[in-house]
Amino acid sequence: MSGAHEEEVVAKFLDASSRGDEGQVTSLLSAVPSLLDRTCPRGWTALMLAARNGHLGMVQTLLRHGCDKSGVNSSGQSASDVAKFWGHKRVCVLLGEREEDGDGVGFENYFGAEPLDRLSAKRTDAAWLQDRKKHPDSVFLLFSDLSPMLHRDQQGVQHLCQLDYEAVKDLLEKPDCVLIFLGVEKRRRSTTGREGASGEPPAWFAISGEEDGAALLGRCPHGEHECSFATAPHRDLLNLSDEDAGVLAPARALLAWHRRYAFCSTCGSATISEEGGHKRTCRKQQCPSNKGIHNTCYPRTDPVVIMLVVHPDGNQCLLGRKSIFPAGMFSCLAGFVEPGETLEAAARREVCEESGVRVGAVRYVSCQPWPMPSQLMIGCLCVAMTTDISVDRSEIEDARWFPRRQVTEALLGGGSRPGPGPVQSGLVLPPKQTIAHQLLRNWISMVANL
Ligand SMILES: [Zn+2]
Image (cartoon, rainbow, N blue to C red):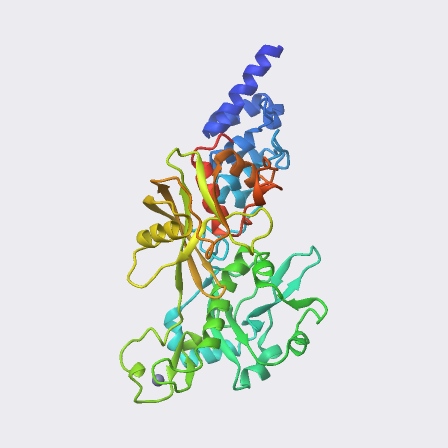
């Protein structure tokens, strides 16, 4: 091929990949196999372009031809970085960067995966629960002071430590042990091949006992030196696989609820755990809480609105920082929804209270369970009507408008232009496991030039 003709064929190939035209890509590759890993001037391969536009079939075709998936473009991004940035989760799964949710539906945020089927109808079936509890395939997660026992594998990756019935049966007999039925596996994992004799998938439970941490570690099947309890939940619990995080979220929130609701909030009598740990019932028979349905008997979830506020010019967003944040870190504003308040009203009120900025339109984006102890973070995109900032120092330390470019740079992990005050070392954003990070990504991706 002549130089000019070759360039033309490469451009045609990359364009077809970008559009998801599998027929054309296949025929070009059969004529010129060396096209597979060719790049455009910015270093983008066909795989990156297909990943950028979420063309699942095209990504499969290119992988089948043996393309290089580890290459990076001139901005240092691999195909999976691009797919992750644009939120194409199925493409991420194909590129080996993400585990699929049990039912293949996918999920938006960390702590949001649902690898277990909660089987809520079985919570009142005491005989079934008793049978599953003693089943050799059942999995028990052990908690001490709301921290799960974690096991670090040879690659240094942390997992929830899975114990069997034999390892915990004496704990289960103790009166202070709280047992929670979490659900059954949506799919049996091929690596373990676990399958109940009854053909039912393994059931998972969380338990919390008063035994001290060191004694609990002695029960670990990997050996006590291989395991530990998370010491800093906000750090240690953000480094799990998506699947483990999805199991941890309900387990930790429920255990925290049991710890705080040992007594009836209506009459002050002791309460007992029922329905696989999903209800607490007052021991006093005449208690009003035992008639009808009361929210005092069921685990609570506290709604929190978290807002990315966009400037009226569309090119800046409002972020705030609390004094406890690491240096340079800014995040989305957030606050609890009050009784009798809509999400939109709560979003407008919180933004105004913390920053003085008035918000018009509020749009829901996605949500995230946050088991610290039991919030539901409801992510919204808001459009500001005013731009003057007046910070309420009792709530936050600082709030500023940040230009899109600075946010993009910080998201991509690059440095940022130095600014006055605490941003001297560059803007630092919350980690990708947080919904604040995902709201920022969502905003950037709407009109990114990446
Ligand atoms: Zn009561």
